Length: 459
Image (cartoon, rainbow, N blue to C red; front, top):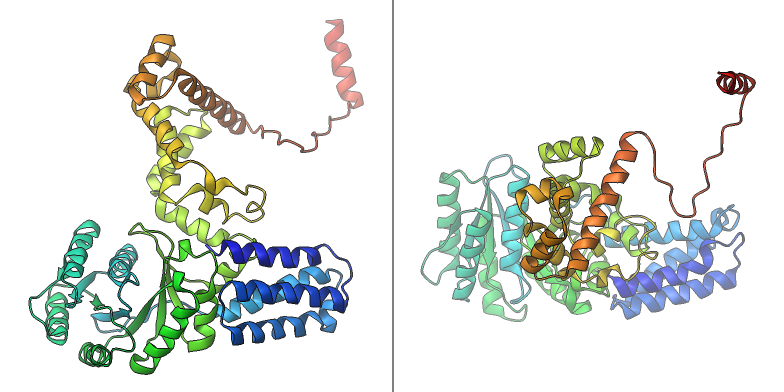
């Protein structure tokens, strides 16, 4: 996500970070690199011009130039301007006091509307709401089947109706689902080109009939600046309230995310960060600015951990680990908790300061994790809970059953043993020594200590 832009901006600011003094030439050089980075990321030209002008003005201000850490002040200015550019403020949806709250999704065909509708329903269900879906895309019959399939997967009801009038389907759907107890109804409308007058009029009729509290435009982040042109056209006809950016995980540039708010005046509300149905999250401009500048995103990391880990499951695992117990069943549980939070490479980028140090972690072969899981699942329940019983013949059987080698089984056994040692040390209050960390100073012998030693020697 934004990899190319992030690399370029961090490189442009890297020369300034450690400087004790800045001059106009150094700032101009950095601003030129920032401008090029944004243009290459397919950000709207006018947006780039205004952004660079704002940062440059702040960078040349007396507050920065006379600061003890001027380079860091410039980075701070870039961070704040990026946050403002992407839409500072809340990204929350509006919910009416009298249910149901209606959310209408619109956009081009192929932008990911149907999947976004299901992802949004799941997100709202996790928040304690009772969502339901209306299949109002009558232009593409496969869209109705797709939405029903997704609805079964996330356990959310889907209303469908035969016919060709989406206005009637929407009215009937809202009425039926509200009667069934839904407090939020999400409308999956047909994809349409903004230049198709007939379909745009149809969308207006659907909006007027459903009276949505939120009209969300679904945009494919991969289309860059073209997504902004589409947004402008839809804004003139349906006056949407916010944007859902899909396929943001595959967008190395960031043009849409950095342009849409500035050009349309409407904020990005939600972003899709993966193909899985649970990979939709609220958009936080300040957090995204931190990610782009390599500062990490601890709040998102914490939120993902809370969503991925059940409280009882966490307490049970913590208790066992503090006792210095770490069986392969525990290993499998902790491994699956982490996998629910997302890819390892993606998680590392959320940790401040680790992005560059662990560069290339995205290239970790995900199949390796599957091999580890296969080895553990090839063990008997006794072997998983009491790894000490695994002798040579058992190792060969486990390797054969998991389709791996004995060497891989040995490495996993050694890794578990080291983890158990670490847990036992921590439970006794002994923290592990990190590579390169200064040694703990030895306590000097006091007179009383010396007397104790002499008395022990005499005995």
